[in-house]
Length: 261
Image (cartoon, rainbow, N blue to C red):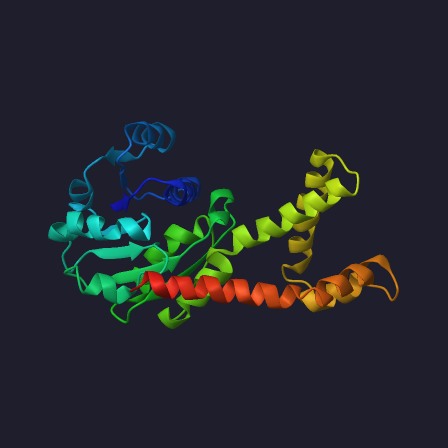
């Protein structure tokens, strides 16, 4: 059995992916809001409870899908029911594997950074495992995330960078798209038309880049000397877009480190 502690958007995305992929895993969700519990039960056929301790009793895998600020309370709730045979999977940003090792009676801890693309089956998840897992154990945990996108493994030392790039990335990309929409409106387009143009352009560009040219090569494919693209790119460079992106990711990675303290 897999127990999800927290039934928010990311937990739902993972459950939806598992159900859609035909997973035979029994799933229990512990969620404090009654309306949300009923929705998850009726939509996905999962068992629900409001009791974190009850949820983990029969679970072999426990997915901690709560905000970092809630983790101390959740750990206090579940610690008596966690033994060395249980696997704890955390998707909370910034919280290290050591945090869980210090508080739970198991070495089987996995730190994961998913992202919101999982809501559409296009998530990017990075998992960090300790050496205590065999291949079968690793594959079982990975299946939770592969069902809603792409999942890779990296050493935990990279997790702050991963959090900044792919964890926070959807919001950063959405900000850029929002800015393009606003610029389109300023240039005289209707908001709906500007939104369609920007979002479809993003969709098409990611499709071209997936297994295709590098971003730099694509830029050269679109840019022609003295053309409109060259003029716009020169403005981005002059205004320091690359440096701004670097500073934003550095700030996000720094905050990820702070959350671990």
